[in-house]
Amino acid sequence: MGKIIAFANQKGGVGKTTTCVNVATYMALMGKKVLILDVDSQGNATTAVGIKKSKDLKTIYDLIDGESSYSEVIKPTIIENLSIIPSTVDLAGAEVELVQIPQREKVIKKILDNIKSEYDFILIDCPPSLGLITVNALTASDSIIIPIQCEFFALEGLTQLMNTVRLIKYHLNPELDIEGVVMTMKDKRFNLTTQVSNEILKFFNKKVYLTTIPRNVRLAEAPSHGLPVALYDANSKGAEAYLSLAEEILKRAGTPYNKISKLRKIKFKEGDDFDE
Image (tube, rainbow, N blue to C red):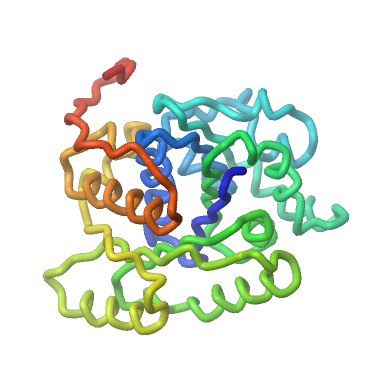
């Protein structure tokens, strides 16, 4: 039975999508069968794995309104073992439509219940809000990973997020747990980074992953080429950090995996098929 993990933080710009996509990629490279569920109407996770947003693209919205089958919506990616249920701006309208549906908080759970046995992990990239789509994602999940930026406003809104998690745990999903907290965009040159890191450690204690994600230009560049950083520049500091984070997540979960060495750097050019 697959484990479902939501990547959530209502504060935007914290590296949530980057973390979801790159952890999913490395899990797949380690031999796990992984599905990304993009429920952010910006569709950044969809773009980051090379799926082109054409008008004919079937998305999570088509599953929610019952117009498409799983086989039409689930798309393979250029990474073996990694698939995605895409999202586009159409999903923005789903929040309003869900209000009228019975058991509206459990729509995504019902969708994933039918397919979770086919995957080792399903990773959900949530929108940067605490609306009905995020509530759906957390209701469907076994656990949540919270990316937190190592900057001044990092803890702003965190109380609201944790309160939402508690309410969902109490009313909708008693099994929901904090899988872990990952500190992103860390720049050791600034004293403020250390101060914020210490506050995060005080707040979450052992839930904080030892691996931290540095500020890295290659991480920022990779999505514009429709590539996870493992395929864009496997030798970058960002790639090494996400490899380490994926290993740490699997170790904490007690899940065996295939150890991989650093992948050779793959130079991107238009038209590449990215075969090793």
